[in-house]
Length: 333
Image 1: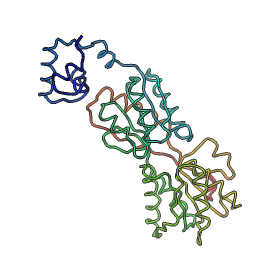
Image 2 (image 1 turned 135 degrees about the vertical axis):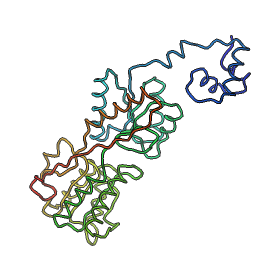
Image 3 (image 1 turned 120 degrees about the horizontal axis):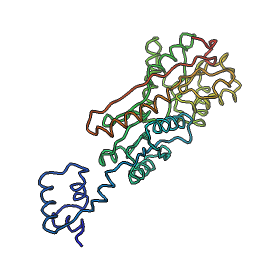
Image 4 (image 1 turned 90 degrees about the vertical axis):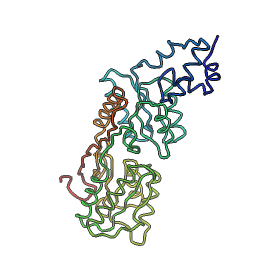
C-alpha cells in the first residue's frame, strides 16, 4: 500500500508538504505542487478523502485559551464568551493557560488537535502560540491584550480612562500619586502606565519613577508594592492600582498600616468587581465592558471563519468610571 511517506520520498519533499498540497492548508510553490502531483500519479497513491473531509468539517466548537482561574475579570470574560458562543449555536471548550507561554502553546495545540473551528486567546507575554496560529492558519481572535496586528483583536481603552481617573485625583489636590503597574510586557500594562504619565504631564507634574511600582498583576506583589510606596521619604497621598487584584493588595497594605482611606490616602483602580460596593469605603474603579468584550470576540471570530482572507480588525471598547468614595468624593461625578 502506497503511503504519504512514499509520495514525499519520490517528490523529494517532506511528508508535511505533501499533506499541505493535498489539503490546501498552506501555500506551496507551483513547482512543488507539480512534483507532488506527478509522484502521486506515478505511485498510484489514493489520498484518504474521509480524513481530509473530517479535517475540513465544522465541529461547532470554539476554543478559548485564557488565564482565568486566578482573576475574576478573566473568569467573567470567559463566561461572556461562552454565552455569546451559545447564542450562535457553538459550544465553548475552555483551557486555562496560567499566563505561561509554554503552557499556552500546549493549550492552543491541544485545541487545534481537537478540531475546534476557531480560538479566542488572551496571549501571554512572550507568547509562542501566535506563531503557531499563523503557521497553521487557524482562525483566531485576541481578547483584552492587543498584541499583534496579524490577528483580529478586541480590547478596551486603557490609557484614556486611566488618565481621567488620575486627573480626578489631581483635581482633589493630590500631587504625589503612586501607580501600581501590572506585569511587564503586556499591552494593557503599557497603556495604563501611559495614561498615568499623560495625566501628570497634562497637569505640569514631574514624573517621579519612585512612584511607579510593579505589582505583578496580583494581590501579594501589589501589597508589597504598596508597602514600598509607603516607605518612601515622600510617600504618595493617592494610589491607583492597575487591576482588580492589585487594588485588593493595596487595600490590604493600607489597612495593615492603619491608614484611613480616603482621609489619609485616596485609592482607585482599574477593573470593577461585584463586591466593590461592600468595601468601606466603597471603591472608585474603572469598569470594563466584559459582556460586550465577549460578544465582540465571538463576532470577530465568526467573521474570520467566514472570510479567512479579509483584513484584520482591531476594536477598542469604552469602559465606564464607577465613582464611589475611596477617591475622596461622595460617589457622584
